[in-house]
Amino acid sequence: MPFADIIGHERVVEIFRRSIKSGKTSHAYIFEGPAGCGRRKTALSLIQALFCSQVDDDACGVCPSCRKVAGNNHGDIHFIEPLPEKRDISIAQLRDLQRELALRPYEAPRKACIMEPADRMNLNSANSFLKTLEEPPGNALIILLTENADMLLPTIRSRCQLVRFAPLSSESVMLLLKRNGMDDTAASLLSQLANGSMQRAAELDSDALAQRHEAVIKHLATLSLDRVATVFTASEELGGNRDETLELLDILLSFARDMIHLASGCSDIINTTIRPTLEGLVSRLNLERTLQLAEDILETRRSVQRNANVKLALDHLFIKMAGAIA
Ligand SMILES: [Zn+2]
Image 1 (cartoon, rainbow, N blue to C red):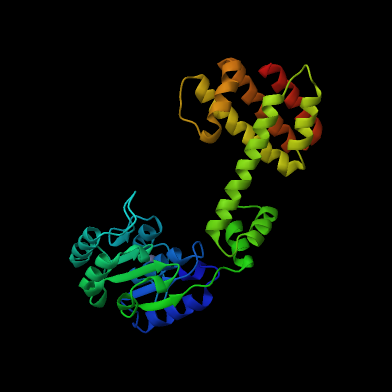
Image 2: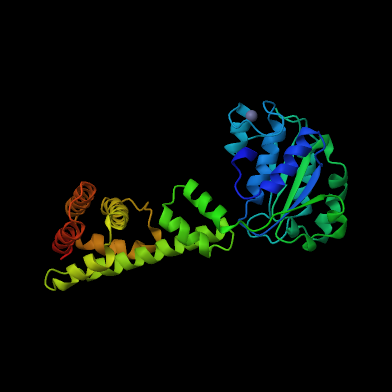
């Protein structure tokens, strides 16, 4: 994404804009800052701006080069991280990288590499990388990401320009969450709890969603027409205002979709964490009743959208569900 779209690191971005304009960018940077604050995005923006020939001090965001960087499929950008199951970035990985960087770029003016987390180079691999850092082959740009630059060897640090990233402000987190499509209430709440990290916000968000799924499943399992109170308790505790109810109905729909898959013998489902419960429900319903259930949920969703009384619509749906599951 172009610098112009970066939220929360205006000072850093301004420095990069100036150094690009004057042609004085460094060949190696250390981006230091907390996880989830936007180091990687900013690294990609810097590369995008250096690769793009349309704008002086930023990326245009629309030319083929910019689109490839944004789509994560630009052949001249190399990512280095520890291989799966490995703690360290190995000498072999860095040798491969050196070979790659020495090749002529496919289409960009130079090659670029992002290493994350750079502090996972061990003593041997870090030492093997010093020469590359000092004189990157083909004028390549190397960006090392770390949460703490002190964890890198002094010989690595001295060969790079250090750029410090502060945690995001809660306003920035809120703006970013809203830009990702989150509604105002949730974005405002999460941004207060996220400690300036989009990564933390995402974890909190999935925690909240997991709790919500658990609550829904718990009520579904107790629904019974013989004990009609279970129906009203479910609708009371799971429902809420119109938006909350629509969100609940979306969760129910995703469950129903998975149940249809399971009932038709396909094991590929979205809500994998509650697979046993969904399988249990499917064993009590046949495919026809599962399809009917999905249709009932859709119909309820349509009427809630059309301003039906939310509580009554939900009561009605849960009665049907209790009848189906019984
Ligand atoms: Zn461009």
